[in-house]
Length: 476
Ligand code: NAD
Image (tube, rainbow, N blue to C red; front, side):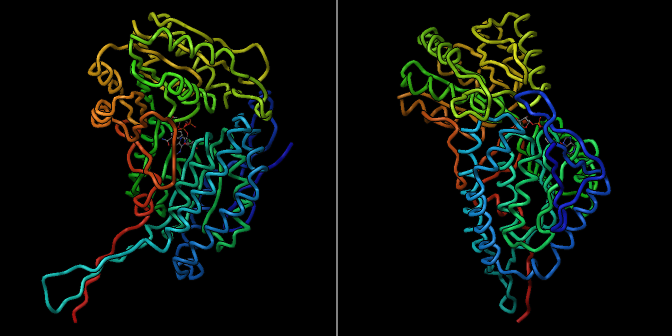
């Protein structure tokens, strides 16, 4: 079995224990992963704290940091096929998607490489003639970055990129569900030439590794992506040392289609909006809110696409739907569907685990118009399951869209520009995509309202989150 190691203080080390990672396409163990227990976590945080103050990093100029990040981006692009294959193996995410995603992960590192020497302080026009006052922007300190298994190279890039650009050091905790891509990423990072300890990559279970990391007194900021329940644990733990936090959590994103929309384009966007990554995406457009005038035709087109999707091994280029990452995800989806059907939701297609090895689950569509409070409408599946609710008026559409505790992404499909603007104002979500879905760029902030978390990743503001301001007073 393939074996992986932690990356701590510039060295590749075994963990205090180890655990098996399963191949989602077969359900069988394929690799041995190191498990970070308390001592390993402490070692990683100590290394990051030492590196933060060491002259090799603390005295490095911002443009030098930028050049190292640029080198990392180039190395990632060079190693993309290997990393994509590994991510596909460990997470079950299809090779088409992992390959495409690594290309833009490199772009995120390039963006933050360019930003490193543009994080500026300020000079203040203070009302005292014998005083000069200016603001220094300083790195906040050691960052604990915690990510889930889906899109982990991307979700770690939006933390590591701005944190290193700002001059912080990082302990990255990969998810125990599929840590291979990030443990391999550490080997690529090691070649970029950063001083030792600037980035440390570990994995382990939330209850020990995650809890010790987020409550560690030397951690200044916790950047977390994952579920809301875990976020609550993290807030309680980080309260110990009053670390700041940014939380990118789940979603139940509305995908609103009006009768005047370009229907073919909306159908295609909805198919990739919900079924890409086999639905395991925080921005999945998982609630279709469709105007009743086009509802039957729209659902018919969607059902045909769902039923003709190529389900197969994730490492084959022809595959469109791979397995879910874990058996737990599949059981969670099946449980929510059963409870929703009991409450009156109507299964249009899918809904049952496929009779083959591995954690496969077919694209599923549920008509929930008669049961808008069913669990399929209110809870996140993190699987390829679309819940559909019909509407007649614009007000009704907005009401249904906002009837959620989440607020991450949303989609609006209409040809009526004035209506699009009204919806942009009224929808409570961190992202509104109009006549498109899932578009991302390092330049645009990404994050949510309500239970979808707080703080934003991407863009200039994200780099400022990794800094703190020092006011300097000088008598002249
Ligand atoms: P999760 O919250 O169970 O796990 C995420 C990470 O947190 C893992 O590394 C896990 O080990 C760690 N963790 C668990 N308990 C911890 C604790 N007590 N202290 C510290 N760390 C702990 O999430 P998951 O099931 O792996 O991922 C799915 C969730 O992530 C979904 O809700 C999804 O919407 C969300 N997500 C959000 C975004 C976003 O950008 N908003 C992106 C992807 C996924």
